[in-house]
Image (cartoon, rainbow, N blue to C red; front, side, top):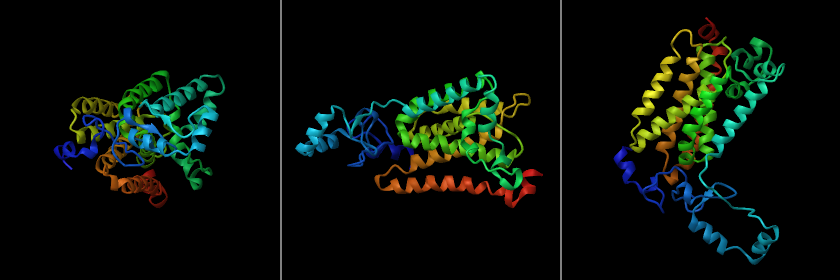
Length: 296
């Protein structure tokens, strides 16, 4: 779909605010709604009209129970805040602060960093697959964690409300996995730490989605290019493999989100994301099938 076609398609904009683009659908009527119009339901979000209809359809017993417990039990207003972004920043910062405790820092880093042989029992005698994701929680220095979390905060404030919390978290996790897989294939014996793969994935998704929406993405492309080049400069001690892996996966996930916006494409979107995850896991078998390719 071209940019002009996207703009003409009302399904890509909030039905109550036609000037606001969104990737979130009401779980009842499947119309697009912006963060201001979203109310959190037990599963997903609902629009104001569906919320009103649901409240009107409530039985007297349900209304009595609601008043009795004096708190909203099923529906909580969604104010559009990037809660997932804040949560990731908080958890990562907490992990870094724990690492500053003498004697504990080395233990945490050794338990969470990513070193490819540790996910292959036949090579290391250990099987620790959680490291594919926990690598994003440990960082080598204050500047390392500070710059990564600053980038996450800046991007997440715009991208999470646009995609929705579930899609944003999925993007972050798949980008982290993509960075770890790239390190496995391109730098097998190198231990790595940091959320850079996930951050580059967010950059890639933002670039693709922004371009699809017709936004000016030149600034994003320049910043992304500069950070990508830095990874190839000797002496910076940066894992360019994780950067490239996260960027490619993030851009792919962003493309999936941008191209599966129709109300009848929700299952397709889910299956495509599952396919991306399965494909990344499949690539982890390359060192087993072709050890000379990875190690030699």
